[in-house]
Amino acid sequence: MITKETLDAYWRDNRILMYVILLIWFAVSYLAAIFASSLNSITILGFPFGYYMGSQGSLIVFVLLNYFYSMKMNELDKKYGLEEE
Image 1 (cartoon, one colour):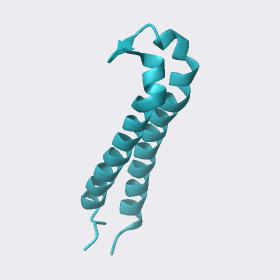
Image 2 (cartoon, helix red, strand yellow):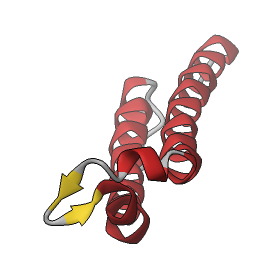
Image 3 (cartoon, rainbow, N blue to C red):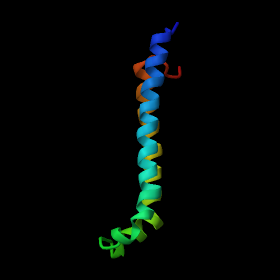
Protein backbone atom coordinates (compact mmCIF):
# COMPACT_ATOMS: atom_id res chain seq x y z
CA MET A 1 0.00 0.00 0.00
CA ILE A 2 1.28 3.42 -0.93
CA THR A 3 0.89 6.14 1.67
CA LYS A 4 -0.61 9.55 1.06
CA GLU A 5 2.74 11.18 1.90
CA THR A 6 4.48 9.11 -0.77
CA LEU A 7 1.87 10.02 -3.38
CA ASP A 8 2.04 13.70 -2.41
CA ALA A 9 5.84 13.68 -2.77
CA TYR A 10 5.55 11.85 -6.10
CA TRP A 11 3.09 14.39 -7.52
CA ARG A 12 5.14 17.32 -6.19
CA ASP A 13 8.22 16.01 -8.01
CA ASN A 14 6.10 15.30 -11.09
CA ARG A 15 4.76 18.87 -11.13
CA ILE A 16 8.24 20.35 -10.74
CA LEU A 17 9.47 18.27 -13.68
CA MET A 18 6.45 19.27 -15.76
CA TYR A 19 6.94 22.98 -14.99
CA VAL A 20 10.61 22.83 -15.99
CA ILE A 21 9.76 21.09 -19.27
CA LEU A 22 6.95 23.56 -20.00
CA LEU A 23 9.31 26.46 -19.31
CA ILE A 24 11.83 25.05 -21.81
CA TRP A 25 9.02 24.45 -24.32
CA PHE A 26 7.82 28.04 -23.90
CA ALA A 27 11.32 29.44 -24.34
CA VAL A 28 11.94 27.42 -27.50
CA SER A 29 8.48 28.06 -28.97
CA TYR A 30 7.87 31.69 -28.21
CA LEU A 31 11.05 33.40 -27.10
CA ALA A 32 13.03 32.07 -30.06
CA ALA A 33 10.36 33.46 -32.40
CA ILE A 34 10.16 36.80 -30.59
CA PHE A 35 13.93 37.27 -30.67
CA ALA A 36 14.45 35.74 -34.14
CA SER A 37 15.80 38.95 -35.65
CA SER A 38 18.39 39.25 -32.88
CA LEU A 39 19.26 35.56 -33.11
CA ASN A 40 19.88 35.83 -36.85
CA SER A 41 23.29 37.38 -36.15
CA ILE A 42 24.40 33.86 -35.07
CA THR A 43 25.05 31.35 -37.86
CA ILE A 44 24.60 27.58 -37.49
CA LEU A 45 25.50 25.30 -40.41
CA GLY A 46 25.39 28.33 -42.69
CA PHE A 47 21.86 29.35 -41.67
CA PRO A 48 20.78 32.22 -39.43
CA PHE A 49 20.02 30.88 -35.94
CA GLY A 50 16.47 32.30 -35.95
CA TYR A 51 15.68 30.42 -39.16
CA TYR A 52 17.38 27.26 -37.90
CA MET A 53 15.35 27.26 -34.67
CA GLY A 54 12.14 27.70 -36.62
CA SER A 55 12.85 25.00 -39.17
CA GLN A 56 14.74 22.29 -37.29
CA GLY A 57 16.05 23.35 -33.93
CA SER A 58 12.72 23.57 -32.16
CA LEU A 59 11.64 20.15 -33.48
CA ILE A 60 14.85 18.58 -32.22
CA VAL A 61 14.37 20.21 -28.82
CA PHE A 62 10.76 18.95 -28.61
CA VAL A 63 11.80 15.36 -29.38
CA LEU A 64 14.57 15.60 -26.77
CA LEU A 65 12.09 17.00 -24.23
CA ASN A 66 9.82 14.01 -24.77
CA TYR A 67 12.72 11.61 -24.31
CA PHE A 68 13.94 13.45 -21.19
CA TYR A 69 10.43 13.48 -19.69
CA SER A 70 10.03 9.75 -20.30
CA MET A 71 13.37 8.94 -18.68
CA LYS A 72 12.75 11.19 -15.67
CA MET A 73 9.24 9.78 -15.14
CA ASN A 74 10.64 6.24 -15.16
CA GLU A 75 13.15 7.35 -12.51
CA LEU A 76 10.39 8.94 -10.43
CA ASP A 77 8.24 5.83 -10.72
CA LYS A 78 11.11 3.66 -9.47
CA LYS A 79 12.00 6.12 -6.71
CA TYR A 80 8.47 6.03 -5.28
CA GLY A 81 7.75 2.37 -6.01
CA LEU A 82 5.17 3.07 -8.71
CA GLU A 83 6.86 1.40 -11.68
CA GLU A 84 4.92 -1.02 -13.82
CA GLU A 85 5.36 -4.68 -13.05
